[in-house]
Length: 142
Image 1 (cartoon, rainbow, N blue to C red):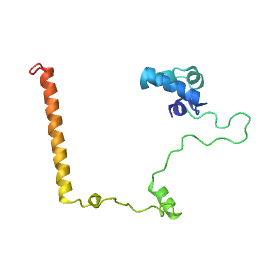
Image 2 (tube, one colour; image 1 turned 60 degrees about the vertical axis):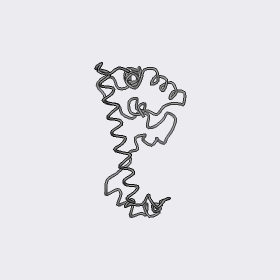
Image 3 (cartoon, rainbow, N blue to C red; image 1 turned 135 degrees about the vertical axis):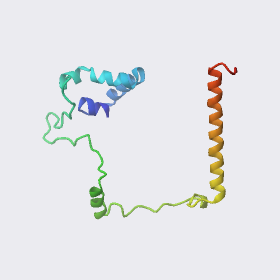
């Protein structure tokens, strides 16, 4: 996706994806972005003053163009209403529970057990944080 957004094109092949993933593995994400922004291809096509845009919509020696790679889903209410009007959401299966205790409202025993696990975990994590802080200050030693 970074190649699409910063270089304005799809990755040429799996080898190019692997090569860029090696850059990510060795230099991290900030190094990867720096490598893309300082690449010869980026500087020749966009330079320092141009916002990257999609290049190569019509590949050489082809009459028809490609679909844009930035196909973002629409979440507006008007678009959802259009989808409902053509029957897009009619075939959704109802939510099926495997066990009875999964249905809301939860049984009291399950609710209390969940609360007990939550509070016990919170106390143990708090004690761990306190122990690490005290050992960092030299008050307790391992």
